Length: 400
Image 1: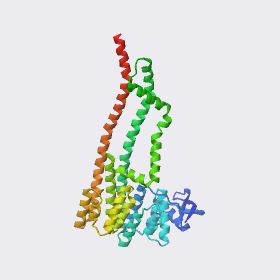
Image 2: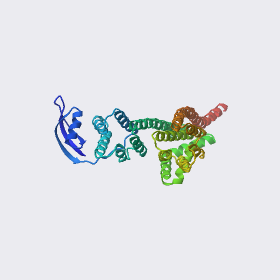
Image 3: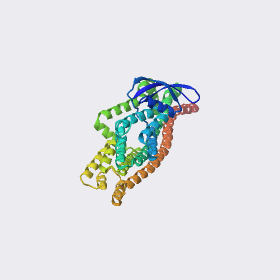
Image 4: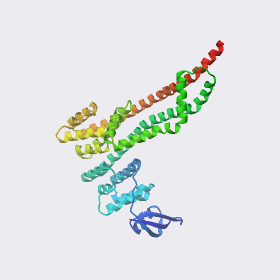
C-alpha cells in the first residue's frame, strides 16, 4: 500500500490535487472515477504503513451497519470495502477499509482481517464474525452485533449521565461555598468586628474558616482533585485497594444499585448475543468476564463459569453466587426449561434497561432538592453567624 499524490480533473474541467492511499495506479484511478474525477498524473510520495486509529463506538456501528446491509444485498466483500473507502467522509474509516481490503485481497477472510486489528475490533466481535462465517449467517450476526453496540452506546450515555450529574452538583455547591467564604464573608465579618461586643462561637468559627480559605486557597481548592487523582493511581497499582473500591461502588447509596443494574444488563446482553450466534455458554461467560470492569462481578462470573464447566446447570451456577438477583436466576431457569435461553437473556436485558432509565430519573429528582437543602443550610449558617452579632448590637443600642 502506498500514498499517492495526484492531479485529477472533474467533468467541468476543474483540476483537483490531493493525496490518497491505493494499492497501485489502477486502484487509484478506480477510486477517483467513483468520485467523478479523471486521473491526469500520479506519483508515489512514500511507502506508508497504515496506522489505524481506534474508531468511536458510533463510527464502528456505522461501519458494521453498512457492511451488514451490503452483504445482505449480495455485494462481494471487496466491492463493499472499495465503495465504502471511496464514499466515506471519515478518514479513519477510509484507512480501515483500505487495511481490510488489502488483507482480504491477500487471502484472509473477514474475521481474520478483523483479528489483525485488535485495537479496533474487540475479541468478542471477531469471534462472532468467525461464527457467522462458519454458519453462513454473517449478515444476521452483523445485525446482532450492530443492535448490541447501539444498545451499549445508549447504556454508556446513561452511565455518564448518572455520574456527571452528581459531580456537577457537587462542583456547583463547592463553587458557591468558596465564593461566599472568600469574597462575601470577609467583607461582612469586617463590619461585624468593627461593631465591637462579644463575638459568638458560630461567628468565630466562620471567621476562622474564611481566613483559612483565603490564606491557603492554593492548597485547599486543589486538594480534592489531588486526592482523587492519587486514589485513582493507587487503585491501578494496588489490586486489593481496587477490589475494595469496586465493592464500595456496588454499595453506594442510590447510585450503587444502578451501577449493578447496568453491569447485569450488559452481561445478559453479551451472553444472549453470543448464545444466539452459536457460541457456547462457557465461552460467552468468558467474554462477559472480559468486558466487566468490576472485579467483584468478574470474580462471581468466573466462579459461575467454573461451576457450569463442572456440570452444574446454568441457573445453579448463577444462584450459587449471591451477587445475582433472584429475577436473573429465575429467568435463566425458565429459559433453560423452555429451551429459549437467548430469549430469557434478552428479556433480562430489556427489563434492566427500562429499570435503569427509571432509577436514573429518580436519582436526578432526588439530587435537585438535596442541592437546595445543602445550599440553604450553608446560607442559613452563614446568615446566622453574621446577623447574630449585628442583632445583638442593635438590641443593646435600643436598651441604652
